[in-house]
Image 1 (cartoon, rainbow, N blue to C red):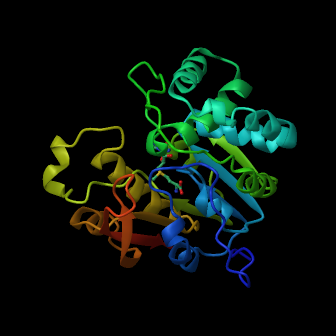
Image 2 (cartoon, rainbow, N blue to C red):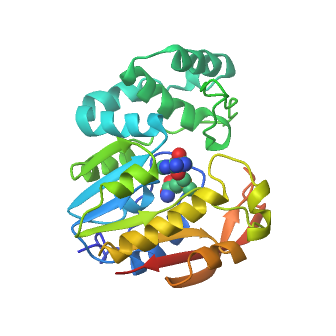
Length: 278
Ligand SMILES: C[S@@+](CC[C@H](N)C(=O)[O-])C[C@H]1O[C@@H](n2cnc3c(N)ncnc32)[C@H](O)[C@@H]1O
């Protein structure tokens, strides 16, 4: 069974804020995800798809070592670690001076437990849930100025429950693909291409996950499917993504996305889900 608790149709909410979270399109993703023994998510972020599916086994990976470190502490240390994290969520800590002190402590510490707890604190108290680092790897998101901040204990325990059947790895998508075996199903949610990106802009596009990475990923999805491992990829719908996902089964649709911290500033974005099958 891949769909979790279908009869209730509850949507499990990730406990982290994450750019590109998949909550709004989770039903469409679940419709297309084939059954299998193990789900592999090479670009987990806040792991919405993992939370809302029910594979026997899960490999959850991302290049962001802080999010994976936090997931590992939750899986291994459970309540003791949750209680420790909750200590940071007192109203006195929703304050710029405290925030910048904790951000400094986070950046200067090698202690994985402290870093995991502070990463959760920073994610919830920082500006717009952003996750951004400077060139030396220091977390540099400014204070979020929220009136109040809730400790997402319920969502955290849902995650811990689900994490019984998961292993978490900090690694790039190519390595994660190399660990796929027959019986696995892969869901990829890479950083999205810009909506106006086309082949034409290929040479000029810079960034950590440029058009050449998008092409590499599409190629890996194709070849992995040919080896018997179905692979679903989500992205913006553009001429470029339609081109690189050619040959896959595609579902194209629009979704309302928030483009700023003000809920009323929204725009419709076109999305594509491309399923490569054996
Ligand atoms: C769009 S987000 C995934 C959002 C996720 N589906 C969710 O619901 O929160 C893309 C993720 O890809 C990760 N990432 C970026 N480059 C990567 C790479 N080369 N290999 C693996 N992960 C990467 C980022 O750290 C980020 O968490």
